Image (cartoon, rainbow, N blue to C red; front, side, top):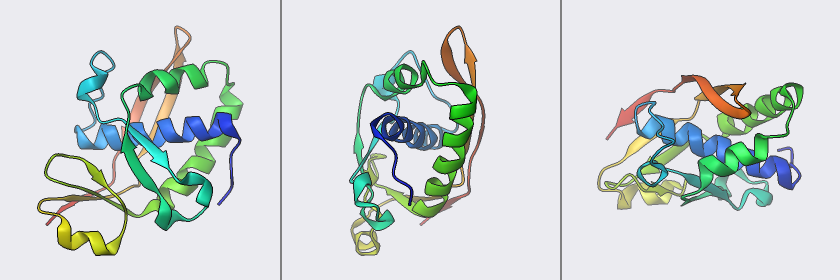
Amino acid sequence: MKFFDAKWKQVLIATIAIIIGFTVYNNYFSTDTPENTVKIFLEAYASGDDKNLKIALSEELYERFNDTLENISLSELEIFEIETKKIVDNVAYVYFDMNNIMLMHEEGQKDNIIHATTLRMHGFLQLEKQDNRWKIVEFMTGSFNHY
């Protein structure tokens, strides 16, 4: 896994969080009410081990996403998107409990999940800069499996 500097790590956190947030809310992401949108921080990224990816909630993620991307060129973003997709494709499944709180990716936790959605994270963002802000212009999700 390629490691990013601090700037790219923040973009990665925001990108994956928005991918998950879009999927949970059926591709609808409300920028006006961030408290009603799932915003997720990626923790333990520096471990370099996909199995150690931990997820936590955050309330400022969308703003951080735009603030971080504000001065990044389109060519830089394209390179970042390619690297991000490689990581996202390797994450495999994520699990949600009955309150849509994301759980860690560990086989042992399946027994503790009352109601969950598994998501194959093939979702990917297409971004466009409008009014000096990055806007999501296209989003494609993976498949859902309920159990």
